[in-house]
Length: 199
Length: 150
Image (cartoon, rainbow over all chains, first blue to last red):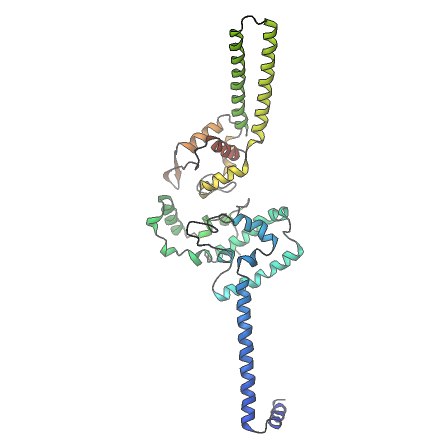
């Protein structure tokens, strides 16, 4: 097989120079194309991390996004914001791709209308929140820590109550989401993060 | 909820007394008025007061403005320690409602709890309970009505 191709190749490019030019050209082409693909892929991936993309479907726009509006992560005194992917998409590349692949199943949910009405969303709210809480607990609230660095949290600037609770949480081995839930979206009825079973 | 009704009933009784008082007051200034007419006037005022009572009671039933209550609770950071149905550092509002169910002094007790910064025990340590971030008593009572109807 390889010999046959080699024979055709030698026949087509009898001179060494022409042969190397051809091989070089092919390699260069492959490099350019893959470079373009990677760039396009990264740009596409980045595009799925924008507020516009996240609120592109009414399920997000009218439910969770509407609730997020006006919360501390949306608007605050400094204008530093945490938008959807800041809390819901991990930043380390491998985790990011994994999360994006999983999220593609949400398209299925969109087209089969799992939560296409407010009523359906309310019925699913607790379950959906538990999915997020479970992941947050498994990853030690990875996304929170994209911005909130535990070692840089100045306890001097915290209230006495917060100081005491944070100190205790550290001893108890708690993670952010154990206490800080229902912050950007309405708190669902039913079990809280601490009651969610980890698989 | 029953507390809210109770509260409005008190208001209505006060209104009734007021209507009654003004009526007799008017009567004393007009001694020539016939007793018959006075009776019918009294009847009208009683009917009116009953109406007011009914309307007030009805309003109290429907009066809890859940959106306003939740907004105030959020603003006042109540949900840091309380949840509607989950136990946090403070009791769940469902448990509070259950505890005070059918108790006529529930609203007043909670009003004192919310406005006097009493000491509460969190994790074995005493700390002051915060007050809702409003000066408006009606807003606080609405919040209490909301908690009691969880």
